[in-house]
Image (cartoon, rainbow, N blue to C red):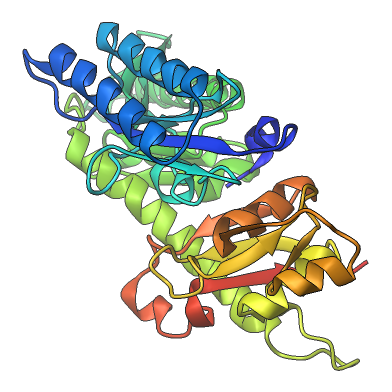
Length: 372
């Protein structure tokens, strides 16, 4: 997950209100339920010590969702009477809506709820052209149509010379249309930054389009087995998207395991456990954070100062570093703040295959390091 969008959360000091709202239930009472949720979240923040203006800002923001509820949910991060960031969620928050008032924004859940949400272009291909759909957790929308040459497109069974000439024209028409579709699909991917290209159609038509795509896109292509004219169900797309995420996370875990092995100079390119991660964060050496939210270390207490590289395992360590003001915070939230400040990325390990988690970072927190 690219963490750059979180920068606004660290331009001002806390404390922060962090609210995760579940909007996945869509009934005739949705508007009233969101009204009740808005009031409940404001009361909960007030109970934890949040100021009145911030409670009101959060309540108003949730009330606004009544007019156009998101498919899954929304997160709100607010301070000093203003909602600073309100990302949509790709899946509902576990356990329903919740609110927290703390020195740092509670961003850890975003890795699972909003982080890995691959966008897919579904291309329905036939000999005459193609239709494109853009699919994500937020739904589907049309993304374009390609109309190729319409004649001739059908072969004959005759062996007459003129018929063989006609069949050659058919082959040329197919090749022309496949090239047109591949070009349009490439442009669509560039414009939408889609992570996946799902090809639907007859095997030959899928193959001919795929062969004409730029090489940079070949690894992003998944071929569905449905026949021409069928439309992929949401369940089919979700399965393909989930498998894409799982493979990516498994690949990052493989990188982490390989980086554990010391190089020729005895240096390791990976660390795990809170003390080692805190040291790496202070030295600006985090390249990629690996986080399993249910790991014991994720909610371990660390101490933070006003700046992202002011963090320590013990409060006294911050004073030794010259920081007079300090607050306790969750380890995952503190490390994510440091990662944002140094342009690192973060990966949730939740989608990893079960076998891949056996050798995951101890305690649920690890990092691949950069070397200066």
